[in-house]
View (tube, rainbow, N blue to C red):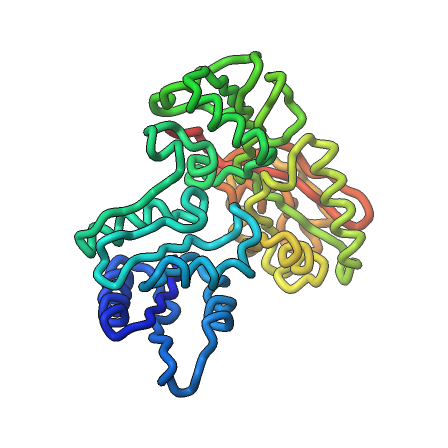
Length: 338
């Protein structure tokens, strides 16, 4: 977690520095720990400081809560992307999870800070206060993409009201289901865990998509990025796999600098894994062989082998070709955990 800290008095600054040292010892990255006073040289406006801090994962204000509220107000955008924000008094008595308590981790961080200061964590989210399952926190911990945000609220509300929420998963489930969740194939409200949002097992279905698919790709040299993107997205749609399910791309190392592949990875924030022809060729399994590909790059198949090699799992759709692009997909050996 990348943390920024700010204080406004000498006493607050001493506490902020102590917290910064503790964060660093716990493996967090401390981006900055600043004291903002009128005497500061060079001067730095709190608004400018906050704008920069918002690019991190967490912000800790040591001072009056109202200062923190006014500072973050212009930058608050989305509960799924906003950083965790804490506000605590300069004696560390009360640690308030001010913003992004669930997905951003402010609730958890507040508890950690309170333990360090000997203070009280102030948490106001209903699911935490009542010890109920929080679907947004669980989704983040599991690496799941949360599709219908309004239905996530409906799930939390139902659990708080003591109603049962169904869950239907295309993947094996490990662990004990939280109170209020029940495996079901139909019902009024429930959670669907699958590679797409197509299934509608419940009248109101909250889709959560695991990021467990590796796309193996190959392409014609100097292919236009738009054409590559069109082909890849088309194949995903035809195979019933949401883009949100893709966690990485894979190819042979001679394609590591191919512009169209790099552009796709940059646009959709996907890492690119590459392997040598020898590494791909040594992979056990049955793959769609091509003498032309073997002659060109030294291995009989790139996209299928690369997908399986990078995922460590199994192929879920074989080589699809068109427009100078080859695409295949593999899925890791993933299980849903509680």
